[in-house]
Amino acid sequence: MLLSYNHYGTVNFPTRIHNNSVSAIDNTFIGKVKYENYSIHPLVNGLSDHDAQLITINNITVEKHINNLMNSLYLNLQLISAMKTGTTFL
Image (cartoon, rainbow, N blue to C red; front, top):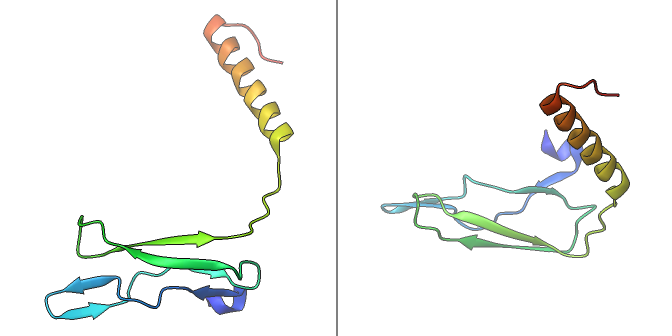
């Protein structure tokens, strides 16, 4: 099903080691068409018998929505202020 959305598994190493068995049951899926330049490594954390994965995706272009974020933040602050003072909002 993930392949139909162009998502592919990236983990090719064991993510769970228990007694004498190893398995790769934990995976990270990415759209390889969009993110071709990546690396993934095991991250042994010692918290459980499952190891984490650390994925690094290089050359990402992130769209900036700072204006929308600032407008939302401003409106939220105005709403909180109105609620505190019991005044109407907008």
